[in-house]
Image (cartoon, rainbow, N blue to C red; front, side, top):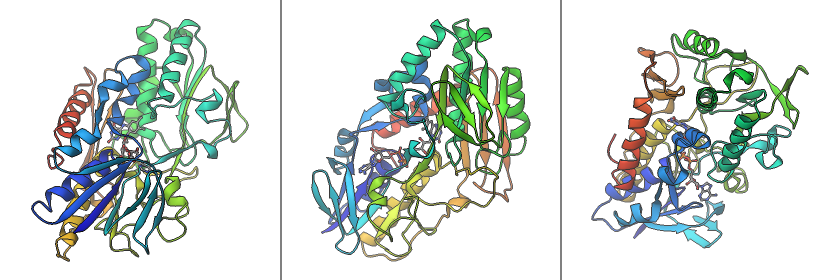
Length: 403
Ligand SMILES: Cc1cc2nc3c(=O)[nH]c(=O)nc-3n(C[C@H](O)[C@H](O)[C@H](O)COP(=O)(O)OP(=O)(O)OC[C@H]3O[C@@H](n4cnc5c(N)ncnc54)[C@H](O)[C@@H]3O)c2cc1C
């Protein structure tokens, strides 16, 4: 029997596991997921939780139940070390042997790189973590009761700029809903060379559109700007400028998870991301694959302030499908692997702008591209809401093969 072990049970991990199972149906192949969390979290809707537009329970689904539908095993545990020579992963619930390993452990939100930014210190707020986000909600309520200046932005090296923009525009929207926007100064600080770059070298028309939106909403912009620290007073920029803030949300830089950093040289790079080829296969360990935010992507552009690549949910889903197929092929004796390098995956994203949205499409993640556009929908964020329903439908029915 061949054993496929998948680390991580969200976008990339769930898709990889279900697809590996589908591509090995009827063969003597066991697929197992080991994940720290036992739920699928539709992360894109987390930006609505602080404003009570969603509860976390509405955007989570139980992973063991989903996997059981397709006869995939599950263990809720944290992977702590990978030994590629012995082909064993150490976890908090014992050792897991494998013949094929898929690493889909996503990012670590690395607050250690920006002084004072750990939300547990109480100066900064998180939008990704189901527990920390309840503090964000509580402090937003306090801001509404006692308005003051707000700073939203992204730290040097941050990758998830789009999500920070979404939080910014939703905060602006809900401050208006509560009738206090005129008493709140809102500032946006971004490491992007220009607003609308998004860590993907921009999309035609994006800079004009984003800057127009910021201007229309009365949001002050600091672009190409490094933040030096966060404190109870506010945010300090690298040039010494002080931005007073009563409520701060700075998206941190991402690194790979500790399990990669602790597994020694060879599995991941210095930042803890996994190098992969066009088949999403490790260049040195042909039985190790990776998908989603866990992979290393070479940046095809430079920026004055460090800036990461937005490895979003759309590529994570495509990569999960490809990895599931390729692992399935190897586990059933085939040697031909499908290739689809990250740079050739389309960039597709919907940016929620507070009951408005911007649809972004690029036929390739990086330039040169043949087709790229940003389409504003000023009437309602219907596409974002539709995608949420669709993804939750597809995940809870274990239909990972759907687009
Ligand atoms: C606030 C926010 C909004 C976003 N909005 C959008 C959007 O609108 N559109 C979009 O396309 N993308 C969006 N993204 C990005 C999107 O969420 C990610 O691309 C996606 O979650 C990546 O999936 P993943 O499976 O690689 O990682 P994750 O979703 O982070 O999943 C990682 C999994 O690994 C598990 N894990 C971690 N460490 C271990 C370990 N040591 N052992 C075992 N298991 C482990 C975790 O429990 C989890 O199950 C957003 C991100 C954020 C933070």
